[in-house]
Length: 53
Image (cartoon, rainbow, N blue to C red; front, side, top):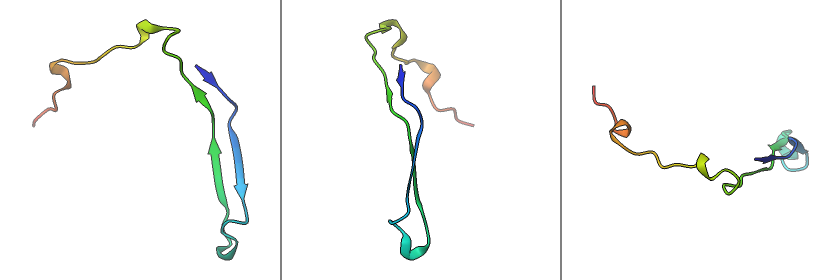
């Protein structure tokens, strides 16, 4: 799994008439399934049935 550093941005001009600030926080993440193919599986069976009370 590849991860980038967290980033934060503030856009003051977006909501200037409301005296508000638009904030955005994001981080880039990548996943490659071919590195560890045994880590991916299909979950099925009776254990997935919604319980009734």
